[in-house]
Image (cartoon, rainbow, N blue to C red; front, side, top):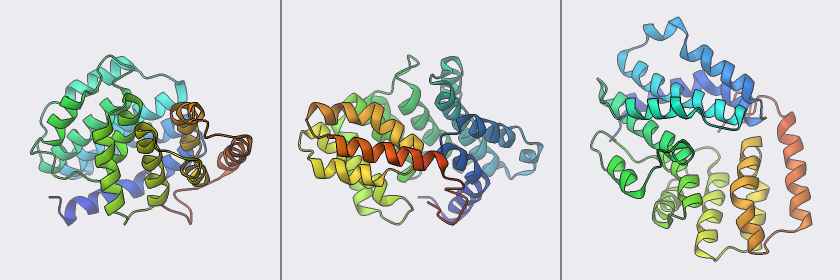
Amino acid sequence: MLDKRYHRITQEIRAETLHVFDHYARGDFSGACTAVEELLYSPDQQEQPVEKLEMLRCYLRFLLLFMKYERDGQWDCRAVRSLSAELELPLGTAFGNHERLLTLIQLRANAGDDCDCPLSVQEFNRIINDPQLLELGRELWFAVCRWAFVNGYVEPLEKAYEYLTVHRDFGMHQETWRRVNLMLKLLRGTANRLDVSMYVDSLELVPQIMEFREDILPGVRERFLWDESMEQKMLRKLVVARDRENYFSGDKQP
């Protein structure tokens, strides 16, 4: 179980990276890459306590690869495989090892299929049962939703749904719950137009809309759950999202 000190450190890291996600939210992935690189290679990092430094470096190295993927439309697979191998090696602190395993799941779930290092259900279960992973929190379940959906893995998606149904004390909960609810119902064959419409109503970020169009919409169309009014609503939301400034660091925070 993670203690208050861990959550204090994660809040510090969150505050230090909010401006990265302002770029991300409006689709400025080049700006997001630059912002992450400035943090990752800052000389100030060496002044951090060891456990925060280990957590920060795991997180930022994955985040940089992810933002470069969003910018370039493809993963740097050599860097992905290199980081994946490094993340299998223990670090020096308990918090660092927790973040290491969490980052390993995030990396493999997002990039594994494209980089010839796919995350199997067996490997997923191995990692989440590692005693050095101190908590199965929302960051983990956020990471596995898309991986489980595109691969048709119902059980991990059900676990994510259960977690998000019980735990509601975080920003963007409604949008996140509607996303996994729609994914799970599409896999089960029980989705309806209301499920689709409710999730489209929740879309506020450029990457959310892009993911929906790429990963979820084909399944929605196959089930004849899409129409022109939903298409126009989604396009209007995309225009608004591209123009929005300071989504995360401004008044509205997740």
